[in-house]
Image 1 (cartoon, helix red, strand yellow):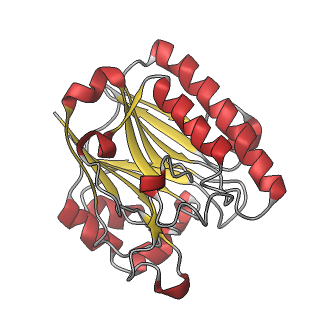
Image 2 (image 1 turned 90 degrees about the horizontal axis):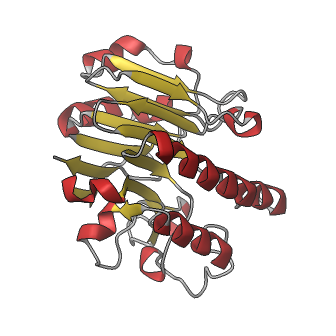
Length: 254
């Protein structure tokens, strides 16, 4: 199975930039989308269906034009779970999960703390709640693939200038410590399972020509539970897709 995670930074804008043509070409079985910035009725379901995805699931934020996640899939899942059951997070449209027979796939969009102290505090509370939620979920759904924008670089290798960003949201010591906790709770960072090279990023600022210079951050991940790691056959970043300030990340499993 081929799974792609993609923060599209507004799905309507991404579609105008040719995202659906790209999607047909990339042809994943499942695409997990973050930052849809749209309600389901604002996007034509038929154009997504004609790209090969008859099963489309959306979990949008209450606030229009903000946050939101979606999953499009070729194969019908046996169950769809909207949100995590915590209202303040579900109102922001941050978690969506589909269950297949052999494993579950989650699209998650972690909050950004870059706008200031209030949202950073919200992010840290969310991270604690998310880890608790996942630990409980694994008891019932032990085979998890968690895809999405975590808004955290795990290690210095994952960011273009670790020294100057040491006190920047997304690379704070407490965020990186949380990422360590999350992985140690039983997850594999599928990209790093294969690739230990530096300068591998999934997000670039729109400022100062960052993408052309590859001054980026790796904040988009495809995690799998430890018990699925032997099924990972490939995990790569797809920087040539340019519909967003993020690029897609791909996971292939047997």
